[in-house]
Image 1 (cartoon, rainbow, N blue to C red):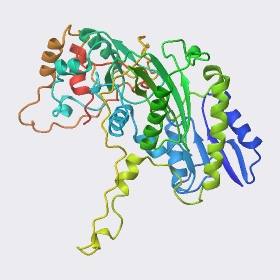
Image 2: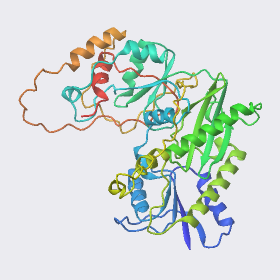
Image 3: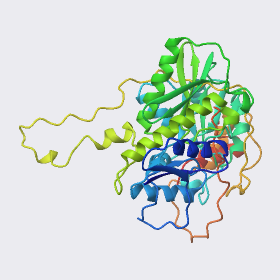
Image 4: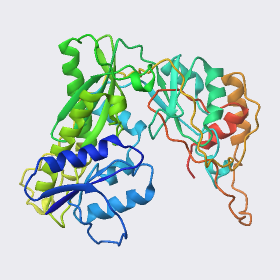
Length: 435
């Protein structure tokens, strides 16, 4: 008997519906249940052939449990190794490489320095070229965390001063600044392994429970086909078995706005009965297929083309072939096209930044005064970041102070974030760079 488990947190409607649907199908040798964990021993297999992961992004213990399970043969949906490495800024870069349009985007240093760092940790970081950043992105724009989800800490910024002021609120979060896409249509699309795609018309500016549109007018088939194609391309490249992709359509071009949602909303009260039925049925079918294909003790994870293309180019022994032998063709890249400059479409609302209840004060607090212009920000950052031409003799190490705030989960909305008011400057210029 092969077990399918689902690992979940606060959600109530989807997990039990999924378990019931799998068991109602009465597939010989397959059963489903909620995952139960009592002890996690290294390199010891779990009792599950398949695990649907709905919570490990919030619980590091679960993420490690799932990696250990995957090493021992469990087919984990989604791949916990790739999910750990993935983030939204990398997503955007990869989207361009596979020919999917995305909003113009830059990444900004955090406003507050990371824990256990000082200005010497940022000697490689120059003052941000705000003039060119603003010229490239334009205003209004959206500033949002470079990793995470849940529409947290997303800001709409109107001008440089607005950006500098709001950036101070983001503390240690590394933010992205994206152009605003004024859209005519917006879609949220479920993707499940096996190229199961369900396109839903969506209005991100509505209250959460009204965002999935039930009786929206039909959309041109050519646009729907482009959206469908984009969903497939992105998930093949990323290697997700369970994901949602959001597209904003401007001038007939779908721009991928958010596509790093490996534990997407599947609650009946927000997505509606029709969409809920689709995701429950198709998730059950996917899990059964993966259980039937699972090989105990082997690696049963899905890897995206981005990873597979890098590892499949050379095979052992290729170097020993006789000189006359033709070189093996290099692995094809997922896509040769470069996506049209992606533009970010996001509702014009500003999402209130979500503060972490456990937030600590920044390791090196910044001064409160915020510059009123990019010029002020730069001059302040220069003074803060100036590093001695030659490193001074290493002073005695002092005990590192406790780290500063932990970044709140990033949100799906798009917002922009320059890192420099006086307070912003110091941290901005130095903040996001790692030691």
